[in-house]
Image 1 (cartoon, rainbow, N blue to C red):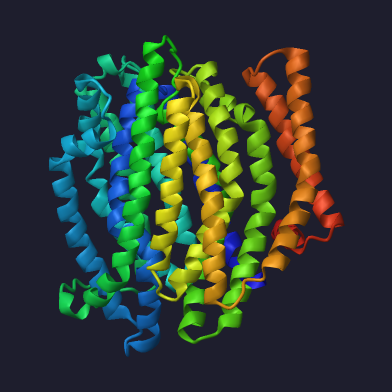
Image 2: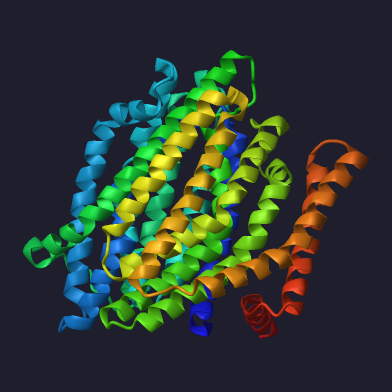
Length: 540
């Protein structure tokens, strides 16, 4: 636990700064282009390279590449150096080709996600996509470099590099605000406006990749080009990755449906006279905020946990796998449980100060907060689900997650369609967020049963008991936050900027302190460990 906690703390610090700067980036973006048509066009274009990277690389990193790098480091005479060089060299060439093809195919890629859009709106998204898609090559090479750093227990750079990305993009967004007269009006956006938005986004990824490459170079890594693909174990990687590709494709099909339903809901709502954004951009902004607690704590714990679990799996140490997993679940849940309750209670109070500026109205920001409240239901099951997948990946098992992903995606499709066709357009996106939460709840139960059989038990009763105690400790915080929301609105009216800040001060600061106090009194060890680590570092 202490080793994982220390490694996770290093990453969490970088991730926290990354997420804070990401908050600022999102705030400036929403202020610059709003949450209606131009915002939707940008977010669709922004999402496409990440979909392609998920299909080609990102999912394979954790499920296949990291375990194979660990194996090469353990078994190869050179400690895996040549293997790592081949990976980066082949990835750089392959992803550059993919990026080129994607730019040429931008109209078709955008068309997949925007079936209900007008030709003018779609053309703006295509132009943005052509500026953004080249980042595929840079992001992929940086991701490989980050994976190699993680296998060497160098966790700081991969978590701090996104800060540089965010700062670059923030600077270019301010340039857009300074020179553009379009702001959130898609009909007034010029080619120069779109170039600033698109190329600024790509410039951030380029800067992030450079930071990771420099960090890897400082570990003694030699960037020697190696294109001898016959020695890269691509056949073995392909056999392992084929199931991962299947899982990613299934998940992306669910995302494709969600995107189309959200963009369609936006157009239907606009035709009904609803002027504030209720489509894809509110969904994405709510999703990004929902991911914040998991990104700071969950990703940090998983990143520290996976290489050790992979080594334990290679050596047949099931006890160590169970111990790593149980520690990870408890450590993540100590933060995710109160965070989920706060998101469900404080959603609009969180989003109004962040998004209600410039081209985004208070009403639009409140709607994003409503979506965030629904996403809060998913935080704990989503985090546990991601941990469970790493149990399979540590064994090199990429097949089982496909079956889990197929079932959960089927649930997501059914619930999403039901929400879209039964709810009014203004509530459809909230229904899509609920479908996401229900999907991961079902998926976590299924994945737990399968993983438990794989490692001969995951300590379900102990984990369940720990979660129950955490919820009991967090419940007074939720009650305090809810009472604050009600009291402020009764005394001062709606959710203005000042009212939201008052609610957040009481709900987050006092509520967080109340949770820590109660958890300490209940002797929840994970909370005490986190507090002790932070206090120790502050004391230095």
